[in-house]
Length: 390
Image 1 (tube, rainbow, N blue to C red):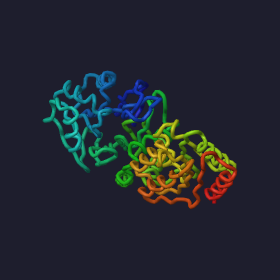
Image 2: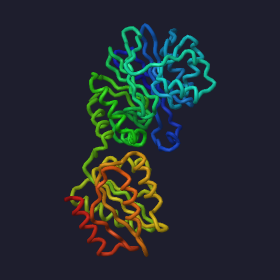
Image 3: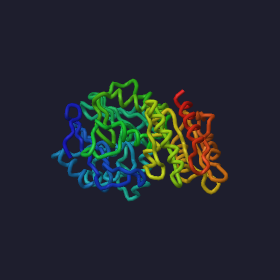
Image 4: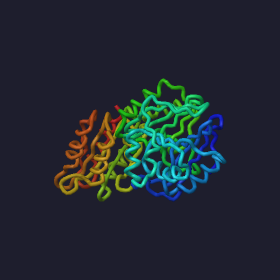
C-alpha cells in the first residue's frame, strides 16, 4: 500500500486492501476488492481511528507499528463495530494494556456480543453527541449517526485540521490499489444505495449536523480519502438520501423466459435512444442485483418488463421489486410491460408490489404481450415511448 497524505501529516493512513474477498457482506460482488480504512493521529496523545477485518489484521498491525515507532497508543476510537472494522481491535488492546477504547454506548455492547472473550471491558470510554477527545493540538468532536448504517455509529470531526472521520458514510466498493476518487460516483452509489439506502432520513439528519462544519478532508472507512471537490460528494449524498433521481433518463429492468419480453425491452430502449434519451437496460436474470437496485434509484423514469410465471410474476422481477421496497425506493414514474401466453398477470402483481412503495406514479399505458411480440405490440411500445418522453 502506498502512503496517503492527510492534512499536515499528523494523521497517518494505516488501512489495508483486501484483494481476496469476492462478496462484501457475503452478498455484494466486489471485483476490485475492498479497502478497510484505518488511521492513527500522532499528537501529545495517540489515537487509532478504527481497525480492520480480522482477515487483514496482521498486515494492519504491521502498518500501525511502523507509524507508531516507539510510541504507544492512548486510545482506539471505534466509530462502528461491524467486524470489517473491529476485527483487529482486541489484539491491539491486548498488546497495549493502557490503551482505552472510545465508542458509543451501543458499540460498547456490540463489541462484547461479537467478541465475548474481550478482556478490556473496564477500559471502554463511552462518548455521545457533542463529547470531545483532547489529543493535544488535535481535538475530536463526536456526532451521533445512528443507522448510518448501524445504531452504534459515530462520526468524529477533528477541529484543527477540519478532518471528518465519517465511518461508513462516503465509502465505496473497491480496493485503493485498484480504484481512486476519479471513478468514485459509480461504486459509491452502489455502495450507498445497497448499504444505507433504507436509511435516507438518518443520512439527512447527519448531513444537517455536518452542514455547520468546515470540512477539508473526509476519511471514510472504505474507499479513497476525499480532499477535493467535497461539494460534489456531499451533493450526491444529499440527492441519494432524499430519494431524488440523480439522472434524467430511463432505466429498463426486464426478465424474460424465452426472449420475447427481452425483445420488447430492447426495442423500447432503441426507440428511446433514437430520441436522445439516456437509457440503461438490465436483464435481471443475468446481471448484478445490487447494480440493478442502483440503476433504479439513479434514474427518474423506470420501465419494468416481465412475463407471468406460475400465475404470478417471474421470480427475478419479484425479487428485484422486493429488494427495492426493502431499500426504501420511492418517488419515481414507472411504466409496465407484461407477457402472458394464456392469462397475463405480471402487471397486476407488479402494481401490487409497487403500491407498497411511497410516491410511485404509474403510467396509464400497459403493454401486454401474448407470447411473441406482434406488430401491434410494437405500435404500443412506440406509444409508450411517446409517454416516456412527453
